[in-house]
Length: 86
Image (cartoon, rainbow, N blue to C red; front, side):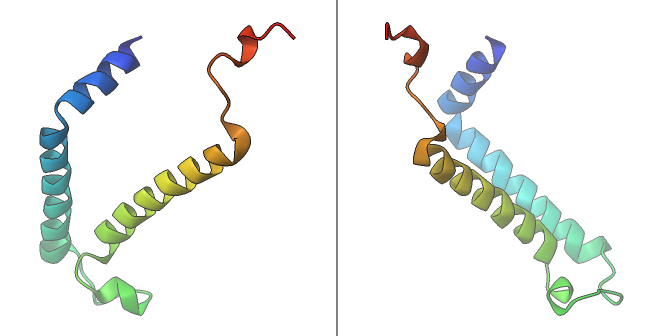
């Protein structure tokens, strides 16, 4: 049950989690700006500042929302599903 304790801890400290996440994204943007050579990019969007950090962030958010939507279509069931006496 350690995962439950972790989730409760993160929910309890949600503001700090958000700050750490945004700082991590900002650090990735700065590293992209300072250390990534954009002269040999394969596509035009790769030349934009912080394209890959934001692409990764948007992709993660999309996966979360699509998974929730898919789960609510019917893949999720009640917690007491196996407790029924049918």
